[in-house]
Length: 84
Image 1 (tube, rainbow, N blue to C red):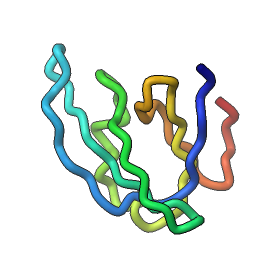
Image 2 (cartoon, rainbow, N blue to C red):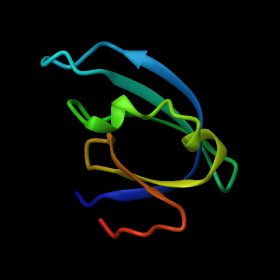
Image 3 (cartoon, rainbow, N blue to C red):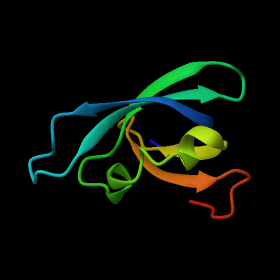
């Protein structure tokens, strides 16, 4: 399944159990530019989990890349400067 993209701001983060390798995971709630709240987890063992609570994700719109399993795998500033 192809990656999908969601544009919006993070409105909530909730810590989930760590991965098998003891890396942090979070359930992220994103308020889309259309006003819809969408919750997705960070990908296991992703370095994204170490910075996802930074305020930049709450203050500015970002493009969240979601893999086929429904996990956030990458975040781009919006408008996107990278094409994944």
